[in-house]
Image (tube, rainbow, N blue to C red; front, side, top):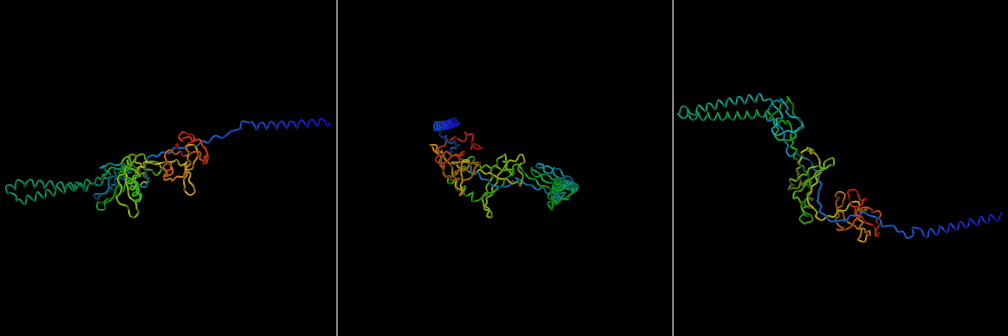
Length: 378
């Protein structure tokens, strides 16, 4: 019994040594021998100076080009309302009819008086030549005819005022009087309000300090005037959308409001669809100048530290990662304006920053050719 057990134990020991030898051989000559990880891929943008429009966002309100109060110009009772509230009306369109009966009677009387006075003057004219009528009587008759003519014209004007018409073309508001109301010329009873909405004004204000700063930058050559020569204005509506029509700047006030330090500006916009309503709040984007040499960097490529310092990671000509401190300005869309720290041709990492350690070698790929580029093609 002892001999077979001893032989079995020896066979087990031999098998263990054989397995160990195979494992050692596998570790010394496996496929991982000499393997190195490839440089990580990063997406870069190559910065180049470019002209950038200097646009200022300023809040303001929509104002009508013309406002006309429709007032009673004669006393009387309103018989009819001839317009639809909130509709467009045209210059000369009848809005109300005031009872014309008393004014018609006054006109008829004045017309008869003029006819009588005119006939008397015509009869006296040949008689004064033969001294059958004195020159004084003839002059009195001519003067009376002229006065009667003036009275007739006044009566005709007042009769015409019984038809209340629109003084301008525009959108009319609510009816402020109704049929049966007594209106008065002496009290200047307001009957309606009309506002011209196409074109329409956008009135806004800008800080006097900003205006002075812009002028100094233009004079120093840091900025250039807008290429069109006429500043363009766009509008952002209350719902956040952009108004589809551009406006033009009409004027900038020549004085600064001493109470607010602001300068008033006015732009004019076409309003064919009536989107812009008087009193509406909007934000105007005013293109005031052009910065001819501006460097922009996508925001994902800029790391901002706790103290506000900004840094980007550059890829050197030998594909090494190098941190570079920069100074940033305002945001333009999804980019930062770089005031200093970068030059034309610098390659900035915008995707893969977590893999880019200073000094390590990377494999740069242009961001606009990479499938990993941020939305918007940065």
